Amino acid sequence: MNRIIVALLASVDAALAVAVGLAATLAPLTLLWVFGFGGAADWGAIWPAGVTVWQFGNLVPLTVELPPEYLAATGIDGDAASFVLSLSPLAFAGFTVIFAARSGVRASRAEAWLTGVATATLVFAALATGAALTGQNTIATAPMWQAVLVPTLLFAVPALTAALVTEWREAGGGAVARLRDRVESAPHGWGDVPGVVVRGSAVVVTGLIGLGAALTAVALFARAGHVVALFEAGNVDVAGATVLTLVQLAYLPTLAIWGFAFAAGPGFAVGEGSAVSPAATQVGVVPGIPALGAVPDSTTSWLLLLALAPVALGALAGWIARSRLVHAGGIGAPATDDPIGARLVTAAGIAAISAAASALLAIAAAGAIGPGRLSTFGPDPGPLALAVALEVFLGAAILLVSPRSRAGGRTSPRPEATATDPDAPTVDARLSGLLAGGRPTDGQEQHPVAPEVPDETPAPRVDETPAPTADEARTEPIELPPRD
Image 1 (cartoon, rainbow, N blue to C red):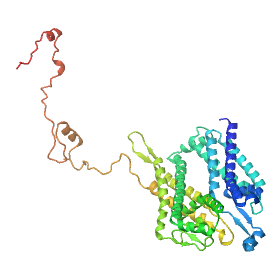
Image 2: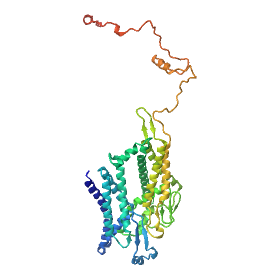
Image 3: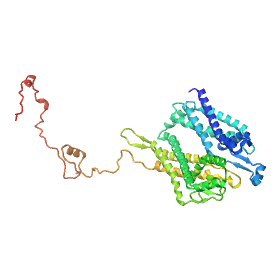
């Protein structure tokens, strides 16, 4: 495809990523302004508020400065007037990542991945800069470089990663394809290692996110009464309840990451000095956010069995990698595995990439929602990465390093004749017995013997009988069967 067309399509993808993200924040804010404030609303504050929420959803930390009027009206201590807000609703970040990956895949399949990724990144950065310059407010602020750089990196890195992966898998030419061919031609089975490591890591990370989402759903269902009680205790009207529900829906991906951190073992925090894990739970005072009603007050030691789920995901990734690392030696030849070194490196690579991805997700799902004790929420990246690495490596190594039965090999030894047993029947004797109509045995008394044929009496040959002539064939009488 023409590079200009690719650049235009990439620009459209970047513009849509920014526009749809901003629209997702401006639409509920507009409804809140209409039904909550009516004609007394300051319509000029909608755009700055929408831009700030979009930046916050794309991992930009905000510094909140509460005005003195608000402190006087609510009775909040002046020491809590300034704090950092960094626990982002990951629904916005997930939307940006999906749009970026889609743009990178399209650019790669159009055979101009570098042009597409570079153009989309520049357009996204320009739009993010324009939004940051026009959407500044005095309550929640962020440094200009963070307001531009963090969302741009959140778009550029997935776009580049998706483009490179697509090039590696599908491209027939180019620098990435030549590197792939060179790597895959490595001797002793090392050429398949990079591909199976990436594939296995993707299976593990996807499974961990799905596991966290399932645990979150179970917790919300099991403690639905506490969630409803916190909704009622908030004493909000219909507009406030709608806004609160939408905000909590945006935080569902964040809660899913908390869920798989709980399953892996280290757990997460819901305030400074708290811990929620299968081993022990110490919660303390929790903010009156309805979604936090799903956090259990106590846990049982049986929940430690949840750590088997990452091990099972590692085993699944190891099975997928093992099936890819088995090569057929040809028609009729048994299948052979790659060397033990390649399989060990594969297991370690899957564990390392899964741990790195878990640490990045933990960083994105952790942060502060207020001053003091509210400054620590979410999982700790270090312990989570270590736990995931050990569990996934254990499961992957079980499938990758364990011995494998060879195709076409014998499953049990069969007794054979040895040189020390001269009376044992040989293979030729067995075959002779079969041809003579006998029954092969392993004993010494029953030896099948072929019938003797005299040497001086040769067997009659079929071709020695003269064939009848045509006249004899016509004059030969035909004998009819007698009638009853």
